[in-house]
Length: 289
Image (spheres, rainbow, N blue to C red):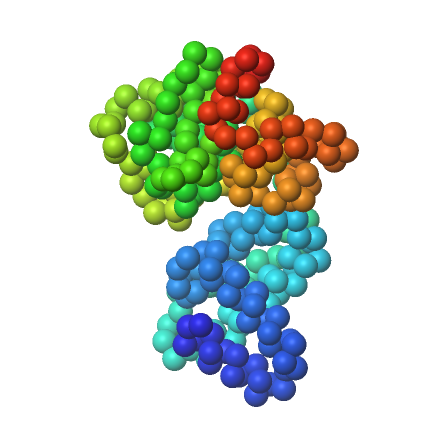
């Protein structure tokens, strides 16, 4: 726990807050700090919006998310009042963040046609590859920054990525119309190169700006991951395999899919615990892509 949070916790106690209230306030603040991966004084309004997206993806109700936001804002009010040094002006934006905005953060499903519109625009190949990668795989930014050119292969009908040293922790199949954008970008790199020489936070910002420039709205990583779950499911990927590949909890996956949960339940377990090679064989035999 950082020094500033310890001081905050001590002041909450002096304000006669109950132990349970202090626990909840500090817990929400620590969740936010862990999510933004930078000092709390450097947070901004966009961090708040991204945090809300993550909570929505995790299946939290609006009321719970609003409580978390209120607790975080309470900290920044305290921080602004007690700090002995000038604070960055963007912290005022956090205090003005309207919790009613949470109502509009329900998951938005981005379709294949939207992705094609983006990648058909005039942009560098790394941008096209990033959009396709997230949309087709649901990969996290923490995993994406570790991907190398050697993690990708190409078969007759699709390309795929396997990520992990001793096991195929990450798997995704790309239909040829999408994979060609990744293949083109791989051709600009040397064997063994990282795909993206950025931090997870910088890569999130990069994706967001791609949306702002080419479709007039930010592309949020967590929003695109929800669309990826739907895309993979529609391609015939077993729900459990989506969970194993992306790390999403099955309950959260079902809530994110744009279909009836009973349809998901009817398909659970058809490919569960299959190895990647066996799965690829079945995938090719079924000619699903």
